Image: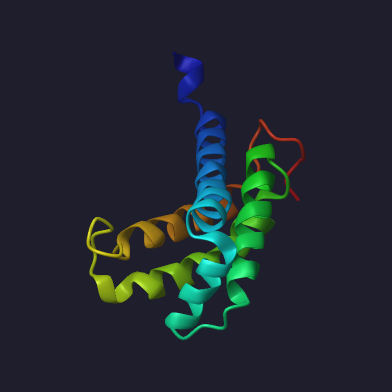
Length: 132
């Protein structure tokens, strides 16, 4: 049990879980549930260029895979911050709670904070690449 309480285990769990969340929001939600065309339509409906949906999809997918593997964690966590701040902005009018209709801003803001924390921590011990 003592070995599970080491910081490198915490970094590993945070990195893996954040990577899985990013993949769930890209591959499952954006691609399978809404479709990339539907996601682009949503982006347009809130005043963003539709092509940004494809950029966001790419960042979330590549960053999710990189984080799970532990490859350039600082870089890929950092790349997600503007995306997550954009999601926080997109949900701001829906109130704080993410359980509100159309989701509030609490969850994307939490993910932004987690991305920042991972950016400061780096890959950790259980990764395919060393921290730069």
